[in-house]
Length: 232
Image 1 (cartoon, rainbow, N blue to C red):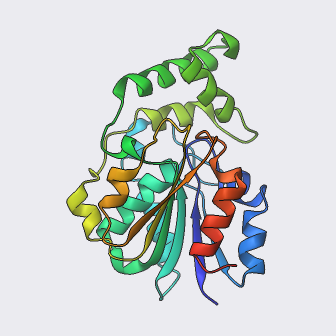
Image 2: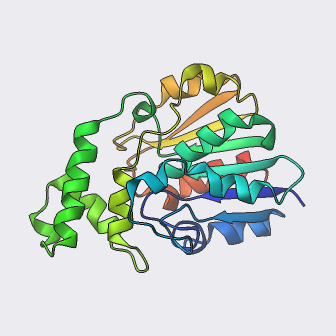
């Protein structure tokens, strides 16, 4: 049975992002073994409050890969997609195909001001501020962060983590397996053409009328991702 690894985004978890939507059940119905990963600071993983602890988020992905001798398919969303790219640049032989969702121009055009706004909003939320009083961008992330089981201080620390390994066009060119990038047309990371062009075997699916946080619950994402990994 071939395996598919699932990596959630910031503020999510394996359970919240992939199981709750029924996506894991569809993969299993399609004959796939599901490998669930909770990134550090999320889900069942430890949740340190020191930003430096999050310098290398690939460690938990690599730990999960080490349980499998054969290359796996992998699907990552947002922070999970960034982590998946860093893992694949370092160990491209571990993957037979990759789906990257909720990433695009932000891979190369990092917006430090937005990160600062989100971090300040999380600090205000931790201090007891009303979410409605936050900047619109911070409010969207704050709502996502307040899912059951989340640790706001850990999530704020992730926002302040060191930059980590730089994702470059040259590094992504070493990822020779088929890569699918899925992004909503209303996602702040749209467009994704430059990212797709970095991969020797990359293709793009754009989801109409879909924003960032709605991506992994979109039927368009379900169809594209399941078909790409051979589950339908």
